[in-house]
Every structure is written in C-alpha cells, then in structure tokens.
Length: 100
Image 1 (spheres, rainbow, N blue to C red):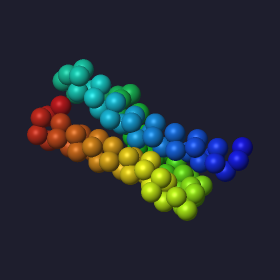
Image 2: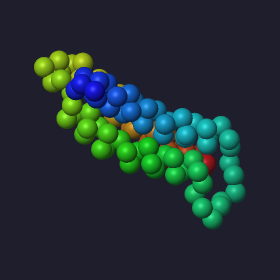
Image 3: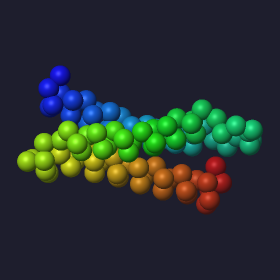
Image 4: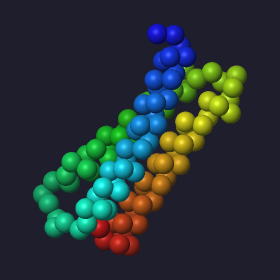
C-alpha cells in the first residue's frame, strides 16, 4: 500500500473515531434516563475506546499526511477536534445540567 493509501485509511479511521462518540452519546440521550448501574455500560466503554484511539490514529494520520497541501491535510484533524469538543460538551451538559 502506498503512502497515500495508508494516509487515506488513517483519515477514514480518524473520521470514524470522531463520529462514534457523538453517535454513542446521541443513542444514550435518546434511550432516556436509566437507574444507576454497577458498571458504566457498553455505551460508556465505546465512548472511551473511541476517544482514546483518536490520539494515536490522529498522530499516524499527521505523520503520513502530505503537508505540501496543508489546507487539505488539516481538514480531517479539524473535523475530529470539532466532533470531540461537541461530544464532550454534550456529555458535560447532560451529566451536570440535565442529569442524564
């Protein structure tokens, strides 16, 4: 696989990992309030894994990116950052203000 193919795979992985926490959080919100459980649940674990994998995948993407086209290379990183801020903002709101 050439460098561009590796970079394309890394960008898709990064975009997927950026969307997963938002989708998981939206699913938990739509599911409604549940009584406290002993374990956090599958949704919380998926959220944590997706967020935890974003750093190594983002670094791998940045290492394989063609920085001669910086505006094109920065888009997946910016999208992932915006989605991460959105996910954590919604998580904070629903845990502290809304009491999800």
